[in-house]
Image 1 (cartoon, rainbow, N blue to C red):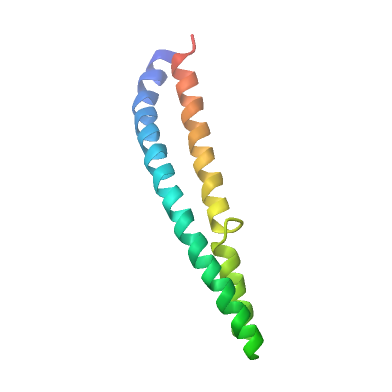
Image 2: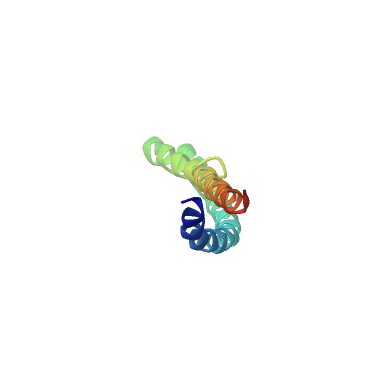
Length: 97
């Protein structure tokens, strides 16, 4: 019964290995682009706060935080790590006796 489960898990390992590699590559470039956008958002938010438009400045600063490395990229990195952990677990299951 275990050998059947290992045979079923093998294609998932292949797909997860390719998926994690491609997503890691894309993630690096997306984080770099989001850092630039976040820096521009912080500058625009500070300028609008100084100009007296408090609501727009706060909205821009919140959006800049979400695009910063502490916002959405951190969540995406966590998900990518969990996919890699799942891939490792499946590989370990297939190669164990």
